[in-house]
Image 1 (cartoon, rainbow, N blue to C red):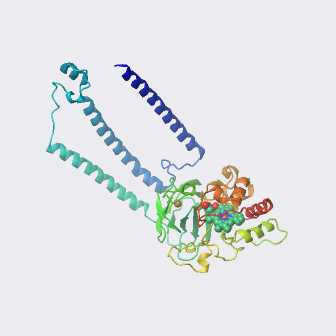
Image 2: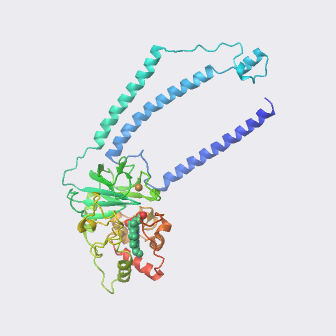
Image 3: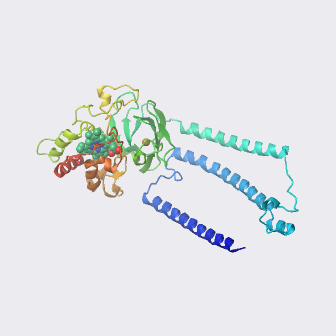
Length: 425
Ligand code: HEC
Ligand SMILES: [Cu+2]
């Protein structure tokens, strides 16, 4: 080899070293990201029967794919090595320096060329056909399983509404999704352990997709349609979910949590959520904040029992909660057409598409039901959000989506608002 080859070799070495550095960095980043949350977006640790069903399909298919991969790659490598051009031998035979590619083989024979070998062609048509047929049969069986609803007609059902860029959960305790919901909450869906909860997934604006990887597969949320889905968890815990369909600017900040409680805890949670907020009187802690809230926030946010029905602030088309493309009557509009229902904000642990913790350290060690009582409020993020939400989470330029900024509020008013919000348990 000449000097040119040596330089190329050194350059090659550097590229390999750099590549392996990048790979190591990637691996470390993945491991660190995996440790950051005790319940990451992990499809490989299913926590409910539906996710297990998917996993039970995934691993055998992966096994088949790995075998096929090694057979095909092995054959390619074998053939490439076995029939490589023997440059140096050819060059020696031809008496040249080996760079004349038109004379690659010299006196050597080309390998025997195979055309139209019936047995071979039948084999590589029939084998994949059988493989894919078997896989598709098992896939269909899994699909049927995943769409089975074992819950009774009058069991709990939850309508899941995606919108730019947060999730609303509307609870129908009697399973009747035609009537206005009993509970409306945002970003955290609280369900009882070991019970299948049928979902109806829809959207108020563009197409989103509801996905809680440890509990079930993805289901699209499409405006004007409701897609049936189910969710069920084997163990109490907190399972992260994301929007899985690119839906605009803050798509990456449209997360949610499925919070799974024991049956007794869940009953307690429901009881708490069914209670309306009580309008505060002068002298009550939080009263000043309530006044600021009613003046600035209540045209978008509903606090059951406190805010009047006022749809003036609701952009056109967003007061259509059942997705039939017509404005709904006032009762159904009560379920917060434009913004998260804040009646029980302080009972949640995250806000704004679950991207901010409402309590320090996401209150991991405190039981969910005690978080409003014992959690340490994440005042910094909450105040920053109220002051200038678009700065914390981008919304679209004409302000038709997301929360507006309130540059006019004084520090005292923000403090009062925060104090009021913490009374909404
Ligand atoms: C123009 C309508 C609008 C107004 C007015 C408004 N908000 Fe919001 N607010 C929203 C929307 C939309 C969201 C959801 C944004 C997101 O998650 O991306 C939101 C989210 C929130 C959240 C997080 C709720 C959750 O569960 O995720 C809080 C807290 C909040 N707003 C407080 C306020 C306060 C306090 C005011 C008055 C100073 C106010 N908002 C005024 C539209 C509004
Ligand atoms: Cu989305």
